[in-house]
Image (cartoon, rainbow, N blue to C red; front, side, top):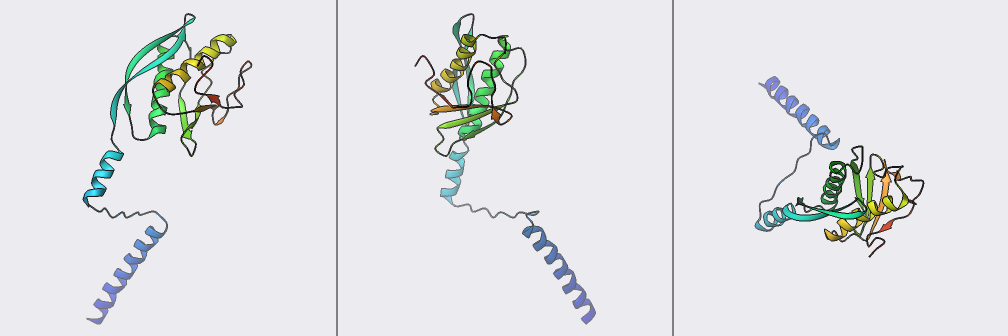
Length: 182
């Protein structure tokens, strides 16, 4: 009987050791959930989504055009802005304003959430465009974001997390959301 007891205790100690090793190295994560009323209501509203009709502006045929679309508004401002800008880029592609598909890879917000750092996979500005066309394309994005009420003050344009490069425009500084026409 003593051998059997030692064997069981050895197995329990071995399994406990493995369990603590997995927890210590963050391989196994155990989260205890509390079900009080305040947590449930708070978590429910923190992850809520709302369908919102937004206006996208784009520069085509020497004028600003608009298109209204429904957008899922998430509680996470950065994620919502990422979807918003990617939808704007899809409109540019659909309207044959840009020739290649451009994707907003990542977005970061400043601590105060008033400066957005947008990192694209490539520049959405065509090199063959005039300065005026590039300027108005950026203006249309700024105007779209401002009208959607993201409460962003400035935008930093990046390509693969480096400053966007253009022969005509300076992207080393942030761009004010009010744009050029205000």
